[in-house]
Image: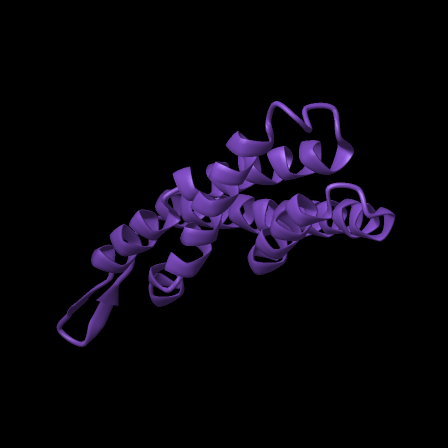
Length: 131
């Protein structure tokens, strides 16, 4: 898990691009459903980034020690805490996937309509990289 969290740099780069895209689109598309969905996606990604689950796993790993051929495990409360945080992270990832799908649906329909398709194409590419 620690290695997986360390390899999420590509996701964080795409989140930064999405954040800048939201800032640029805020005035023109403030009532658009596709824009609202990428705002929700950005909030879910921000919550995921602020969760810092990697630190909990590092702490959990440091509590596992070997003494005289026996493993000393962390307390049950610590394990339950990390489990609940992991379940919350899984729920956030499910939300990110569903919001990405919804946002891509709106931007694909905007491209098919031909209305502001260049902005919709950039937003669609960013959302698809995150998905």
